Length: 387
Figure (cartoon, rainbow, N blue to C red):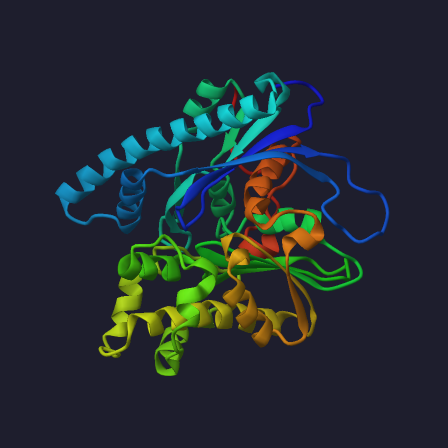
């Protein structure tokens, strides 16, 4: 890696499993003043998003569900090995494609930060673990760039949840000493980062519950569409209050932080178990209720955390105007905006965060916030796979 380089690549694929996001980022020195943060340290040089082939996406979703018989477990292991290889090749392709597009020599990049695709996340299991697809050895080999990966397991090894990890980045980039801020990432799962204006107070955060994952799964099942554009289908339905309250009664919403979750809990099987008590409900009303579930669960946690302030929304959910409207209704004391108002476009925040995490690792700095994950202390995250 070139000495003194401040160019990094970030790779991110979330619980929505819709595409692999890739960014090239330049990190400038932090501003040494007390002016409001506006992501001035981050210069996004280029982006690319590669959709997953349908067959690959279906296999990844199946792998998330897991098998239980000996035969299924053997097939699961073979599927994992195949997808681990495919995901790494797609990751390397995204990096090489973007660098060629930007006419940047790979030798100019200090490191790639690769999140991979989470297929198991059980931080509270007796054998706590979090597993991601995307062999970093292969990424380093195919790009010629040092690759940092496996960010979650060191935090878990120190007693943490291994998630969410982006709050440390949010705190570094988005803290504003003039206002209490919440950074809300709405991917498949939603998570919040709480950034007090008083910098003597630590930042914190956690997964609030489902973001887009249930809405995406439901519309795919009933309309064969990957997502509900602008929440239009949800807006045409009616919220079923009895179903909503039943969904909100899940133990996860009652737990205190630190906590994290994923498709292992919030999936269509979970939803269908609740729908057994609502056999006559219309599909469109389920969609309306799922959007409200996301908005209510997020807003409840934010209202408990700060009396007022600003909410910066990022992730795919930031493009759902119906969801943003419902959030604003439930967050009357907050200004709900997208992260573009603070200098970083919503769809690229998480990929940028993993470029930042790679920088932290190589600089020998912690990448977790113990107040968020519950780890025993700050930890340098990730394994380094040399070019």
